[in-house]
Length: 72
Image (cartoon, rainbow, N blue to C red):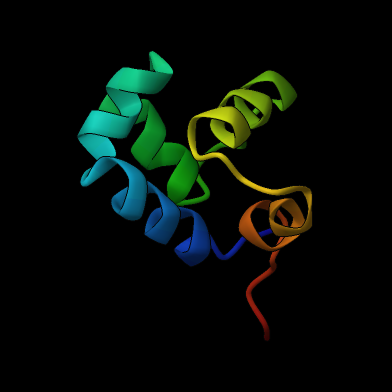
């Protein structure tokens, strides 16, 4: 499955200014983060929980940020 990560990228820029700064806060290399944002690999459950905390996501935002599929 290919997920549309545009909302996640927007939240990252809004809160951290760059994917690099966010990756550092998350403890993830930029290349690893980039691969996950580009659907080369998936976020683990523990990574999703950490991201939710770092981005201060509300419960109602989680589905849209993490599980929105590209429409065909």
